[in-house]
Image (tube, rainbow over all chains, first blue to last red; front, side, top):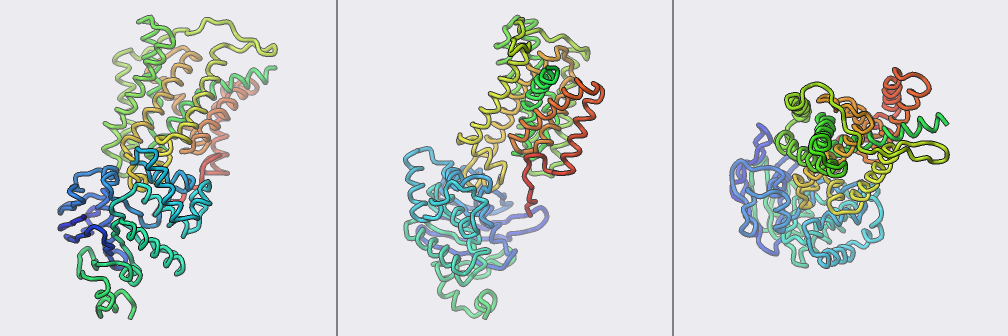
Amino acid sequence: MLSVKGLEVYYGAIHALHGVSFDVAQGEIVSLIGANGAGKSTVLKTLSGLLRAKNGEAFFMKHSLRAMEPHSIVQAGLAQVPEGRRVFQQMTVQENLEMGAFTQRDRAAIEQGFEHVFARFPRLKERRRQLAGTLSGGEQQMLAMGRALMSVPKLLMLDEPSMGLSPILVNEIFSIIAEVSASGTTILLVEQNARMALSIAHRAYVLETGRIVMSGDAKELLGDDAIQKAYLGH
Amino acid sequence: MIVLRQLINGLHVGSIYALIALGYTMVYGIVKLINFAHGDIIMVGSYVAMVLMAQAGLPFWAAMAASMALCGILGVTMERVAYKPLRSLPRINSLITAIGVSLLLQNTSQLIFSPNPQPFPTAFKVPPVSIGGLDIGFITLFTIVVSVGLMLALQAFVRATKMGKAMRAVSEDMGAAQLMGINVNTTVSVTFAIGSVLAAIGAVLYSSAYPSIAPTMGSLPGLKAFIAAVLGGIGVLPGAMLGGFIMGVAESLTKGFISSQLADAVVYGILIVVLLVKPSGILGRRTNEKV
């Protein structure tokens, strides 16, 4: 579904990604783990078209992402929940969700999107008239996820969904990710919380200073000595 | 009675400042650019309306509509040609470019129309309207009604329409808006178009009140409107409106009761005091610098 080959990205003179390659197949949960600054968010930003790759290719269901504007990428079915949630604080919960459905033309489909999101996140329904900036961190994460789901993506990319949340909320967010996956949306998950990410992912890639250094079955990586030392604190 | 009269005069100029200030504040809200050429759109709008009325003999409405259309196109073109290529660069680049665009417009207009002031045709030969024993000039009444109507319409547009909400989203977080599938270029173009159309309306109303137009005429109302936008809180629509009215009324009351020469000093004084007490402007939000 998504195929990334030799992606090289620069921030000015800084070489952030040194030829990153990976694949995501339909229906999978694939996780990208790695330390702070390894380039995980850069991968997602490049795939969404917010950053431009200097070299390499990224194909999403036959679309070459390099040539596409960010809004066309969303329209093609690739959505992202950005790091730090980035909900529109001065807009209501309802308006945030409407923005998520921006690419949808069909009114009935948008209504259906609202129903699905409110069914998955009942708290957002209670607070739909509230400004997003008044929500708690966990609620904002749910709003950011609901907002991305409003575009009915085929592949959903999540950037550090657990950041700054209490362990209970982290569990809740991850069980929602598993639910979203079970309902047919493919997931690319970027996480620093390697243990949580590996526990729900099918496969994972380990990113270190802009390079993929390891990849494989998530359960096997969870048991790997090197991974345990570097990322799981054993 | 005199107080009331000055108050109405103040609302008259104030509503023009507010219309122009909306353009500054909308553009700032979306692309964080002080568009110094915004004042010169007033000049272009006035010349277009003048030529169409005085030389082509068109009625006021037709001239105003043409001026709005032309200024809208000018605003969008300005952004596409001069500002868009610089959007990802440090802000100082587009700021300097904006000054360049301003000079370009002024000098082009001098080439075409000569630097000498020209009279703006009188649009309405209608007797003043008497309200409660107070004679109010038709153009004054017209200006206030049109401006307030436009501000309400703009507010409704931004609150309730899909494009209006997209504009708010882009203004709050351009990157996140792009991740929603919002086409930022379209949104920015619409913003410049609306701001420039409002400036054209402001231009025709301004020139009807002060009927002498010249290539550099945009600087003063442009500057006043910019101050109005900052006073009210730049980036906030109701702030621009409030700022415009405060400036107009303060200016007019000073002229009426203290001295004409002091009017600008009082206006700038208010600005300084407000910025000392609340640096983000009267209705401005505290800006959290993003890392």
